[in-house]
Image (cartoon, rainbow, N blue to C red; front, side, top):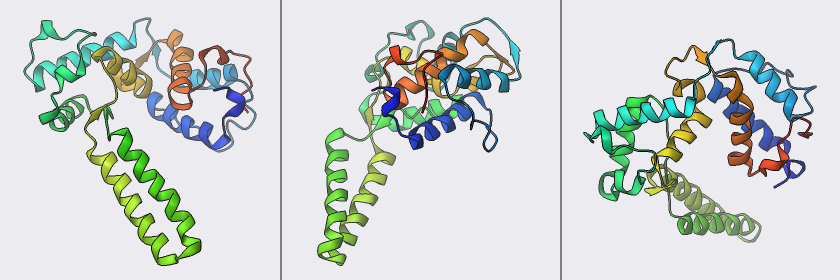
Length: 220
């Protein structure tokens, strides 16, 4: 997708994720005059008032994951490698429980599990049909909306399908979505990583082509 095809509401939602990841807050209208991707990265960097340290955050995130796994799931330290398959690490039987243990140990919501795509699609279709149903028979439409909404909520809450494949991908996700918490020393940051992390958020959250994200790229 091209940046020009993204709605302003989607940009605003992504900025909330930026605030969470870097533990910063944008004041009202602070970004009103921001027009390019480079300007956005600059203002994010200026708001991070931490000591600069040239170490790799993704590597630190992996080490945190390894420690949490060895302590919570009693896994041998030497077996925890970036290419370790999550399906082996989290068997389906106790998957939700194991993931929650790791999240509790890390103090980070990993959001690794999702419902089956087919179930989400069916519930979404019921939701759309119910909206049209409101114009035909109000009672029918309301029942459909209630059923699909509750179904979507429960499927997201109790989904058991892994959204990633390897532990290395989890470390990258941690770094992207919880940058500050992924650092070994949360009072530091790596200045050279900021543009890369913001780019990754745009790419994963908005499906923006990597080639689109240059300093001079116009956001809206």
